[in-house]
Amino acid sequence: MTPLCVIPARLGSKRLANKNILPLGGRPMLVHTVEAALASGVFDRVIVSTEDNGIARIAEAAGAVSHQRPQELAGDLVSATDVCIEVAEALETKGARHDAVVCLQPSSPLRNGRDIAASWQRMVETGADYLVSVTPIDPHYFHWAVHKDETNGWEMFFRDRFLMERPLLPPAFRPNGAIKIGKLAPLKAIRNFFGPKLEIYEMPEDRSIHVAEQFDFDLADFLLRRRTSA
Image (cartoon, rainbow, N blue to C red; front, side, top):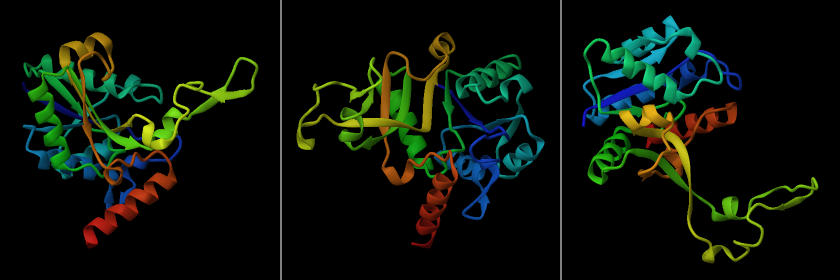
């Protein structure tokens, strides 16, 4: 298979302004994802899709190829899947064809090239149509979740199905957003990375930080600086 690497990096962000280019560990956050993609050795080129010229310049200086994103795909409710498919289709019109898309969001700056390479290898070896990176979560967080019921009171989401001690609870994982892979044909059909024949790649918590708010950014910055000073 021939993989296409797409890094969606728009300028706007509601919860943390301009987060993709905020200085993380002394460099724009986007750069960490570009460097991890290049270090993986999986791709012939790394493409950053953005509507912003400043982000495009940062991406190119880091070794990526910038792709001008259509303005209609730069809004808050546009999915990364649609952005990836737009890049793939734009390249197809120029004769460049790919079998799969690897989506690497800048908001997961702590995943590394080995994570990306191992994810791609698992995708190929298993014959999966989709792969997402995950990290383990305390099973209490999932199996003991509560929500409002029909009377506006509170109840356990799974009722008493998992009302047992932690050692007896089945393991649970959360998609961490760091790596999403989809074969292009089925990805176009369902337009998300969670279709049938889904595989996972497990990552530790300290490489699974997803930056959405200031606290996430500060935590990622702390972990990155600790890593580089070790």
